Length: 579
Image (cartoon, rainbow, N blue to C red; front, side, top):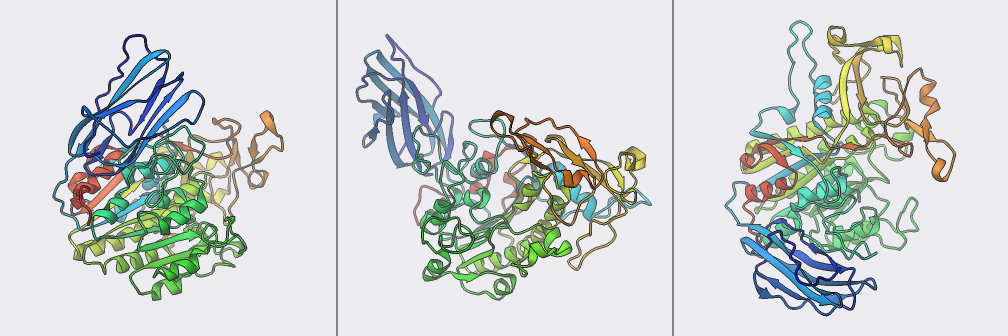
């Protein structure tokens, strides 16, 4: 179909069928002109349905495949469609034994524009809401006790070209997870919780859902730009997967791994954490159920493979694949400061996020047509969930050094847009100071207002990042929690905040981790369901910091889907073209 579009009207007339319709793309969807999608129409509650008439802007559509998933349903699918610029209306009409039924939806396709940017470097701090950034700012650049003035700013907050506050939500909920939020950035669409770049459908197969083309697929199809994906999370986690895969279930790990190399993106640079889904089932730690070995196969596809920091820094070539752990790359504190045996014994030479970012840019920069690079700090979120604010916040400081390198690159490549944002927020807040000399878990050690003082974090590690062992630190907590023991202080060996209560069924739940309670702690009664064992995402807005070419496309209050269109405008994407 060359044109398609939407008005939001449900048209029922005469003696109506009892059928209910679902049409995807959904009513009111906004797309790029030329952006590809799968059209799906589902009618449920039908009785003896005949065939349907489907029109787009009054013209009959042909070629739809009809299926019957359930005894009282009929579906029609037409894959790989796109729209011309403008508003379009799709109407479905059919009759079953109960009478006629119809439904119309409208869509809008934005026109191609001329862009200023040749390159885009997109940083996503997973779970990095405004308050999480501010906690990192307070530690990295403490206030001067002599004046009360800040001693500096994070790189991501300095020298801004523009900034925005971004709201997040899902297709099926006001709250969001990392899969659907990253997918919204990648496609401009609202996506189901736990889904990657697909619309819903009524089948059990999680890999057959109607797809929507991502910015990385569009760039691969319509331009000669290179694509890079960097993350410290395990390789098939939601955020990196959102820029290369399609599935209704983010846990389809093996299928996601396969799509990196067989899908429509095929990133030129893929530097990620865990290898479980890229190694054959016979290899220790593998999560696969087959013999696929992407480490070996990737090299036959022209990738250079690296497995540690030393190899990464020495790597050359135009295509690079790196796996640096069996699972997530541990937190910055664990790798650079605590260096516990369990953290580093099997993987003693893991790269910092700034190492992977720099190598990715150096590799992608070889393409004269430009590049798109997504860099995720996934471990921010993975430590906010278990309420370990220190590990989460120190990972922001690690990402900030990667942002600093990207900004330096942009100074000599002014046709580069650098964006720093998050996929969603957590309920973190800095509410006081804490006198660490009194030990863990002392409410009387919490200082509020003038008694909070000025935590200074004067000691720094070899990378110039503060150490957490300040005698006066911050009191930082979370609003949405299970029952747990609050110590106010961090610990060198990570502990989950809760443990199972040992019961099953309706009585199953979680208790505060007794090992943490024994340290000396304040018992906090949770406000989440008893089935919750950790903190959760919130509906709070997240920051967006923009630097360089095309930054004017990001300002004010934005819905997360608008980031996709802003990136497309900055790059001057014309999705109607094929290279």
